[in-house]
Image (tube, rainbow, N blue to C red; front, side, top):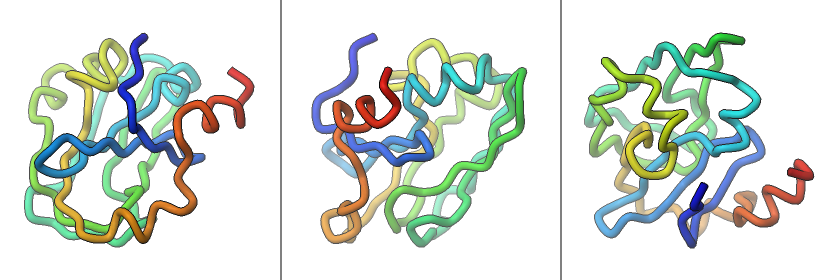
Length: 127
């Protein structure tokens, strides 16, 4: 699986990726391996504001229901509506079609100190 350059990851398996107009947030491929097939996703409404570390979404897999924590403070600019009908896109293409939300944020640089570059994240879990 091709992992985009510049991706930052949390130890809870969320990722943050600048996309030119804001930041995509989703689940890493390693996090998805732990969860198994995603069968349901509950996403926030556009315009909702979150502070870094707050629960912003819930997903259900064949193994567990999991809360997701936003890796940076910001306002939800877009929600991936395709996931409501096709949550399997998260597993099939986590970095392209399976992103969860996009946020607008002015605080990513100052809040990213505890986020890991993908290779360091991967090394932490000895993938």
